[in-house]
Length: 345
Image 1 (cartoon, one colour):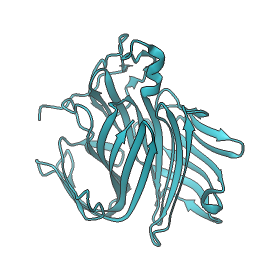
Image 2 (tube, helix red, strand yellow; image 1 turned 60 degrees about the vertical axis):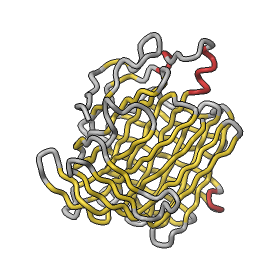
Image 3 (cartoon, rainbow, N blue to C red; image 1 turned 120 degrees about the vertical axis):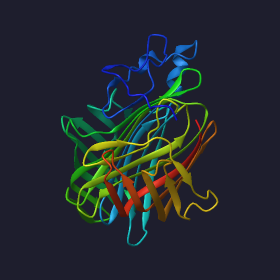
Image 4 (cartoon, rainbow, N blue to C red; image 1 turned 30 degrees about the horizontal axis):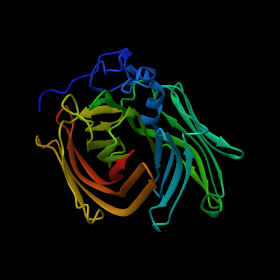
């Protein structure tokens, strides 16, 4: 693979004709998501229906996985949350489908602003300001009880993340920021129990996506945020599928807030039995992992023109990674996830 291209910035994502100005990756979000310049239909009002925008937050604790999402995928807004209990396997997910994204607010960029959906006494609100991302959730009736949360994620200015611009055919593209290993503090209330979220044991992650996709799309994504045996924070971000990744892949790992970039990775898994072990490996030997799932989440949407099927596996990573300086890190029972997603949207 040719050398991966580093995004130059600050600058704009799109030129006046809706073309990507550059493709590649960076450790910081250096491009302004000027989606008002999107231009691939002659009749401009149709273009909004093809934009895909989402903010997906996950919090990994020693005992639970909490996830909250606000999204607008053009014809439909999707607001959802789910909770997984690692010990019992108990799982609950609730989803709101909102025609044409009614009531959903998403900020222009990933660095600041408010992401929100609210209706009466139900709301999901994510506020990014300075070094803190505040997640505020009130969902009456969730799981037959309620899901409430107040969690602050710390993301200092020098905390690196995987930022990537991937071209897709005919002026389509994906601009994505993945932030791993943000120390989390606060609480989550679920089914009458308050779970304390403490930064010494709990980490948050963000998948921030903005783009215009082909109607039929496929991807694999794998991620984790946790701790090494010596208590350094370790994150994983790996994937492949849609678009032209000749300029850069999203593959990397993150050690104490610093990105260590990888190129192509080989994924091996059985899509007839997703709960069988997965393997991920790099040709240069810098990453060798086995992912052993213990839970499978399946999410399906079938709404006429919009269809989606996700198999998200929660499990444990074991193996090794090698840093840019040559240090070998042993990964031991690191809880994370891997997913396959097929979509027509």
